[in-house]
Image 1 (tube, rainbow, N blue to C red):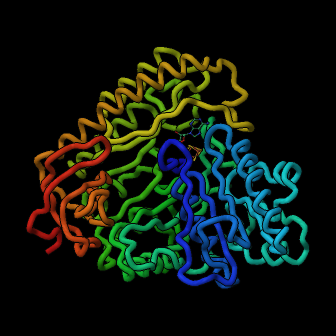
Image 2 (cartoon, helix red, strand yellow):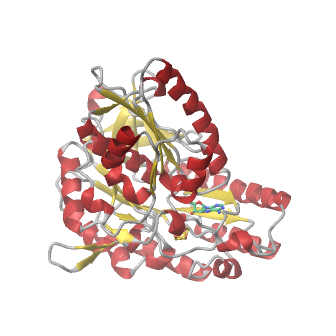
Length: 473
Ligand code: 5AD
Ligand code: SF4
């Protein structure tokens, strides 16, 4: 499963400026999903020993990394237009005698490496998601040669084995963190580029996952999200030499003191096995909120998409999850207008949505990705039909999201406070279902998990008042 991009437009993150004047400035522009955000942090980690420190503007950067996302439309054009801007920065710095290394990373780099070097020869490094651990070597080579370096092969060695320990989440004040445990995908859904850009499925070994999780917990992280394109297909080598699945890993993570919330994303319905469902029953730390993309409610389209399950099988998984954990809420991804989708197929999707009741969902118009089977398929759906279906679906999903949020009003909810609120005197945290919740309270409570009596539903968040009791007193 491709990781859901965080919000409809690609997000851009910039590392916080260094406290002191850095020896070398590094500016990372991140587009796309949480996996990319995590990868950007790790690229920062591998470059730190070379003296690179984050700076907040490209003009101050000796190296600029554009970490790209390819999951949906027009990614390549966006990259070239951003590169056009970065070229001006590079030229302006050169006029002042300063060199700037420009690197393009992520899925667009993987898919269009040669094209990037042909169209933007001022780019120094192109690297695919499997080769970040080689970044220092590439930087050294680029600096020496002045020529472009391209590195998008899937190497035989495991990328995970070469990355240093993450530094970023150890910054005090991070109470939530992402931890990549699995990458790649062998499922080849008809519409998706991930198997071509992120390569075959591979899992990080258990010892290194647990070590990183322990370090995160020791630095104050309470809420950890395990990441992977097919995270519930996790099959990492355990310390005992056997292969551990995600359920087994979750039991071990739940033993780590301080980690009170464990999540994982993104899952595939086909890998939602009985052991994992049982873990939801047994482990209070496993949050009752699961992103489980279904894409369509029509068996015909699910087959065309090569999803490997039916709509009823999805309904059954959700039923078993709710049996195991009655407060389980579901989030999902949908695509409307996949080639061949009729009005009847679309109605089956609407029916599935009505049957399940989603707390949150992301829905997209199908957009052909070059090289994927669906892109060349006949019976492409006209744009205006896709628009109308998307609107109808989003309206229904929005109603369900509001209804779900409304169910929390009047209830007591455990909230992990993570930051100051938008209004003075307020602090903000997240519920087990990831809604932001605002209360009036002192900043000293940030980092604590406390019960909140929810009093109101706001557009995408909730308001409440602090209760006296701690969650795990
Ligand atoms: N067109 C539209 N949506 C897509 N997604 C992935 N590929 C495409 C595409 N070609 C959506 C899927 C996936 C999410 C991350 O992005 O719903 O789950
Ligand atoms: Fe997810 Fe299918 Fe893409 Fe794999 S091929 S990442 S399962 S959408």
